[in-house]
Image (cartoon, rainbow, N blue to C red; front, top):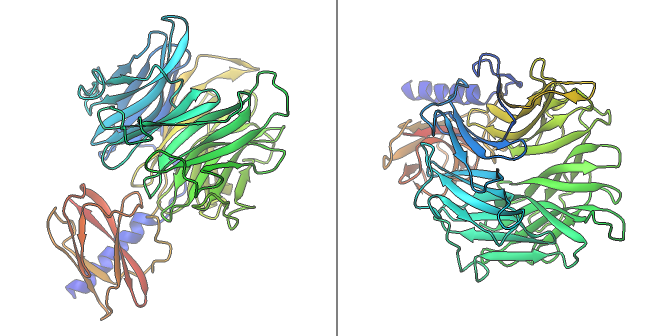
Length: 520
C-alpha cells in the first residue's frame, strides 16, 4: 500500500509540475510583472541563478560603461551585489558594451566590444570574469579583464564543462574568428596552432557578421550570423545569407558540415536572411532563429538543420518557418530565442510600427507550428503602461518555466520619443524535459530515496516484473547528464553531479517512463 501511495504521489507531482500554463505577467515580480528602472540603459543579457536571483547585463544607450545588476526574486535590487546592487564594467574610456554573458562555477564571464580614442578612435574586444559577489575575478586575465587589441569585435561567448572559453566576432570586416582560451583567459595553443581560428570571405566587398556561438553535443563550435554584400558602393546586387559554420575541436573547419564547414542559407532567393541565435537539439540537430527581410518588412524566421548542414525538410517549408506575427506587414525584429526542454521554441524581440511597439513572445511547437496553448495564436505582447514603445533583447527561462525579458521602454507620440528606460518583465509559463516526448504518461516506477544526497545509492523498482533495458539521466534543462552519475541497471548514484532537479528516463519492453528526482 505504501509503495502504491508513493507511486501515485510521484505521478501527481510530475503532472502538476509540467501541466502547461498559459503565458501571463507574473505579479510576484515588482507587483505587476514589469519593472522600469534607470534611464539610457538596455537590459540585453540575462542569467537566472539557481536561487532565482536575476543577473542582468545593462548596456549604455550611446557611449558610457556597461553595468551588471542583480535583482532578487521579487524584482528588488540585490544590494549585496557589487556596489548597492550594481557592478560597473569599464574597459575603454569612450564606451564598453557587453555582447555575451555566461555563468560557470557561480562566476559570470562576459565578452564585449569597446570604443577608445587613444591613438585615434577604434574598437577592440575583451573578456572579463565577475565573482558571485560582484567584483573582478583576480585570477582571470589582468585583474579580471583580458583585452584583445588585435581583433575588431566580440559578439558571443560560450564555455565548455571544463571551463574553456570560446568567443567569436569580427577579425576584419571580411574575416571572422573563433578564439579559445582556458578559464583564466590564456589562449589554448592546441586550437588551430595559436588559439584562434580565422575564416575570411575572400572578397573585401563580402562581409561576415557573427551573432552567436554555441557548442554542440560533440563539443564542436557552431556559429551563426550572416554573410552579406558590403554597403560600400561595390558593384553587384545586395544580399544577406544566413550563415552557419562548424569547427572541429582542433579549430579547423569541419568539412563534413555543409560545404567545407560553411552553410549559407536563404528562405527564398529574393529574401534577405540572418541568424541571430543557434540552438542544439538533444540529437545534435541545429535550430537557427533569426530574421527575414522581404523588401517590405522584417519577420521572425526559424531554420532547422540536420547535423550535416542540410535543411530538415520535415520542419516547416524546406526547413524554414517564417512568422509575420500579426500578418500586417509591421516591422518585427527577433532579438533572442530559447530552445525549451520540452522541444518548443520561444522567440522574443519587438512587434509594431510607428509610436507603439511591443515586447513580444512567440512560442512555437517543436514542429514549428504556433503553440496556441501558450497564448492566442502563440503570441503574447505588451507595453509598459504609458510607455508605449518597447523592445526586448535579453531573455532567460528558469527551471520552473518562468520567463524573464529585458530591454528598453519609452513613450513616443507622433514620432517624438521621450527618455529611454531599461525595462524588465517576468511571465508565468511552464515546460517539461526535452528528449522525453515518447514517454508514457503513467508513471509505474518507485524511486527512493527522493531527495537523495551525494554518494547515496538511489534505487528504482517497477510495479511490473519487467526488466529495465536502459536508464538515462537528464538535467533540469533537458540535456543528457552523463557526467557526475554512476548508473546501473536498477540504481544510480550522484558522485559529483551538482545539487538540483533531474529526470530519470527508464526504458522497458513496454516503453519509456519518466520520474523526477532531486539531489541535495
